[in-house]
Picture 1 (cartoon, rainbow, N blue to C red):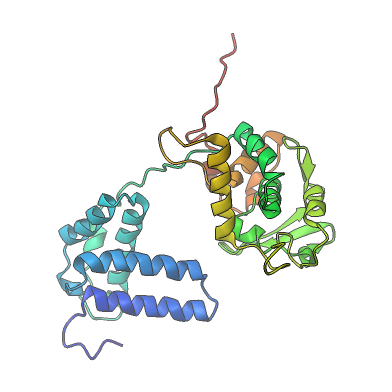
Picture 2: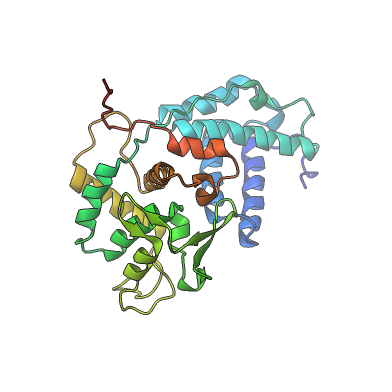
Length: 301
C-alpha cells in the first residue's frame, strides 16, 4: 500500500493508515465505535510528539518522549496504551516491508505502570445513593443502578437490554466488549438489596411503550438511554449524596457497581465469573479485590 514511498513513511502517515483501517472495520461492524475513538485519541497523542519522524528513525528515547508527554497531562493509562500502540504500528510497518524487521523501538521500552486511581463503591454508599435516586427527576437512573447491581453487566450492555431478550425465564445478554453470551435467570436475587432480576424488570415496566428496559420518558420517549448520560447523572448523584471527593484517587464511577455486584454475589456463593462473562478467574478476582475500599474491618478478639 505504501509502495509510493521511496523511503519509510512518517509516523503521522502510518498512524493515519492505521486509523483508516479501524474506520473500515467499524463500518463493517467488526469493531465497536469506541475502539475507533480510542485509536484516534492515542494516534493524536503520538503524532503530536513524533509525527514528523520517519518510522525507521524512531528510537526508544523517542518513544519515551511520547510516554512522558502523556504522563505530564495526567493520563497514566493512556501513556501505557500509547506505548502499546507504537509497538503495533511498528509491527504493521514491518509486516508491510516499509521498515526493517528489527526496527521496533517500542519493544525496548518497559510498559509504564498505570496505577488504578478509582475507588471502590461500598454497599453503604450505594444504599444512600439509591435512596435519593428513587425520587430523583430521572427515573431511568434509579432503574439503571438496580439493573447494574442485580445483573453485574457493563453499562453499554444494560442500556441495550430489550424485553425480547427474555427467553425461557432468562435475560440473555451478548456482551458487546467480549462477545460473551450470558443467560441470567429472572429468579436471580441479590440478597444484599433484597431484589431479584424479575423484580427490577417489573420496575422497568412503567407504562411507556418501549422495547428497552431502560428508556427515555420525555423527549424521544421509548428510546434507549444514552450510556454516557447515565454516567454523567450517576456522577452528579454521587457528588450530591456523598459530597465532594476528598480522599486519595478518584471517586467511584457507574462502572464500580459491577465490582459491587461481584462482591455481593460472591458472598452469596455464586460463580461470579460466569455472571460477569469473564474467560479467566483472575479477571474476576480483580473485581473482587478491595482496592481503595473505604470500610473498617473489625479484628475479632
